[in-house]
Length: 101
Image (spheres, one colour):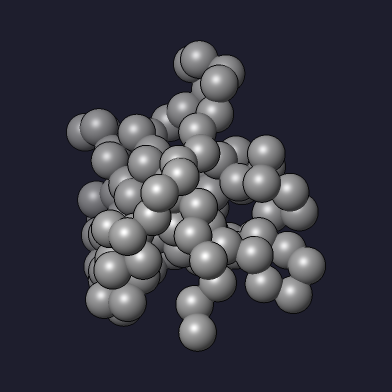
């Protein structure tokens, strides 16, 4: 499998953190900002496994998120990442942003 590079935004809504992929329209939830990287990684891995079970390349057929999320990503001032080396199955660039209007 090729290296996977994914950008995402994380924002708080209704007392939880939502993590929205940019290149791939993958959305997941986390209870705490410290859980954001692992929660999103689990969602990515689940999508990769499903794609492979369907006989597709990893993440094949998953469209990009709506453009407003890319704009939020580009405007972000803070990023979050896992500090546990070797625990990532993909290269993630997750940025914390204000909740979308």
